[in-house]
Amino acid sequence: MIGYILAIGAAATWSMVALSATRIVRYFGSYNYNLLRLLGIIVLFLPYVIFNWDPIYFDKSIFIAIFLSSVVGIIIGDTFLFICLKRLGPRRQALLFSLQIPFTIILAEIFLQTLPSMIELIGCCLIFFGIIVAIQFNRTIPDDDLENIQGNKYVGLFAGAGLALCQAIGIILMKPALEATDPIIVSYVRVVTAAVLMFFSLGFLKNNNLLEKMKDVKKTLYSIFLGFMGMGVGMTMLIIALKNSDPGIISTLSSMMPIMIIPILWIVTKNYAGHLAVIGATLTCFGAVSYTHLTLPTKRIV
Image (cartoon, rainbow, N blue to C red):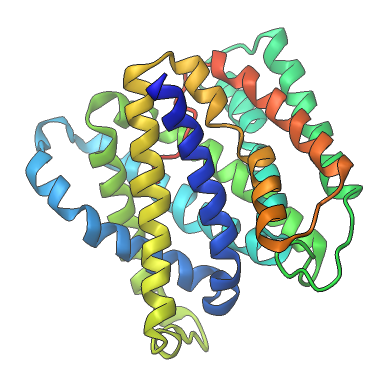
């Protein structure tokens, strides 16, 4: 029972982080917020890594996999994530993130010779249909900056699809490393790699105002806190749940973010997204259930 509670808690934590991060991402910008979040994770998880580091499992092939996964999954993928969050809001971003499921199934079939079952194919169709219903036919709510679209909708949709594809590629790349050693250690190395690359890339970005924005200490610390909540609290709950309960049920419960975020938005903003938004999110979650039959890792560690 405790495992099921923790899995639901993980999904609720990620929903709250997505909701809380929307305005802060719009302040810092997608790239800058991503970098700040990574720096916070590096500092906060350093004690764990120091006491649990075991270099015996890190050979050349694993480091190459981690490097490629960092570039695709964190630098490109998470930047897409925050672009999508900034433009479409947390509810639509959570829906589009579910596209990583069909993308992972397709990539697994191509590169790992993992054939999808009929249930998984039906699940993919439910995800696509649910996303279309929830995004295309939802209500427009005046003066709700968490729900209304900011800027070009199609840029946000492209970023959401790009996010899902990058996460799917990252899962495929990380599979050998995650099987070889502690997933938190692997993820930490992945985060450090991405942060170093992003930090040195700042010099090539014109008119980047990260240092100017960081003068607002409250918002800077809040960004670090959100990174800790998403990876530290959310993923720790999921890992404990997976160790103590049935992985299929845990994966299903922790995939409920698209529908769980709707009542949270309703409570926070006092605005209801509409019946079709609920129906679409429900279909997407049913589609996500089919993914629990895959043997690949189904969740991001960071």
